[in-house]
Amino acid sequence: MRSGALSFNIKKECNVTKARSGVMKLPHYEVKTPVFMPVGTQGTMKGLLPDQLEELDCEIILGNTYHLGNRPGTDILEKVGGLHKFMGWNRALLTDSGGFQMVSLLKLAEITEEGVKFKSPYDNSEIMLTPEKSIEIQNCIGADIIMQLDDVVQTTFQDYNRIKEATERTSRWLDRCISAHQRPTEQSIFPIVQGLLNKELREQSAGEHMKKDVNGFAIGGLSGGEAKDDFWPMVSLSTGILDKNRPRYLMGVGLAIDLVVCVALGVDMFDCVFPTRTARFGCALVNTGQLNLKQKQYETDLNPIDKDCTCQTCKNYTRAYLHCIVTVESVACHLISVHNIAFQV
View 1 (cartoon, rainbow, N blue to C red):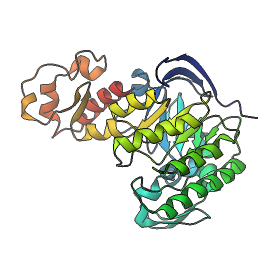
View 2 (cartoon, one colour):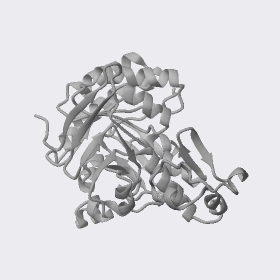
View 3 (spheres, rainbow, N blue to C red):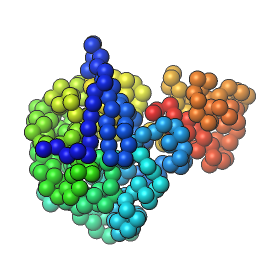
View 4 (cartoon, helix red, strand yellow):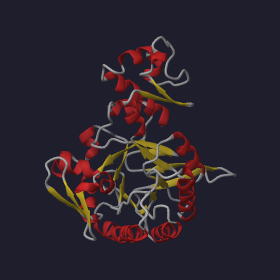
């Protein structure tokens, strides 16, 4: 019996594609889909405050289990009553499992059936992140949606035996995560479909996850440098197997073209650091792509970033002003981040 921590209602469906709009009711907030989730790795969005995110109509954000488990740590999170209270955020939260750190910190990690053994980048101490430990941390964080720990392999990796091992291990770890989950009536756990670019393995993974009594699904192992002609068909294959009446979350995707295509392929949820990361490089997102506000052509441009955008940055500041401060003032990153998040959500 699925938990009551999530209900998903499809409101409209496209007659031509697999696109749909819906409402996902979560313990802390009601989220309209399709939805883009900005990433607040350590319980904060780089350059933005929680009330600014609310002003931008952001309904759900993402936190990172690995980083939050290290700092502030589970003791503090338990003491204050979870991440919502700790960061002053009253809307929905999703946490990833820490599995992606297998790729991003691979030189510091050893992957076994037990879990992932890390050398902490904070103090070089040894950490064993097991499926059970990942869920324990996420139960302390208290996010509305939590992820299973998965065995993550770089998308462009070619070793079939390693990809097969990771796909099958992810399924075994899912069972351990579900068994360890202590708050099923308050938090929904999503399994993660793996298999990289291998059609048979991805079908196997999605099919096995479909047997589980869960409230939604995540699609992982993609958007890691592969060509679009490889990426998009794997998304379509995954959504073609996964239950249409449960939300589907495509992990780590934030480029505009990918959002449009993958919504048409039946995806409901996305996350990516792209909007805030590109802001730190002085780039603003617009319908035609990006504006690199460091370029001299914006020195005398008195237009806003986007005349149709209603964010505070576009209401109050010109491209010329942002060009003037972008390389010398940290507030420029803040102002561009405000716009980029507004553009993305």
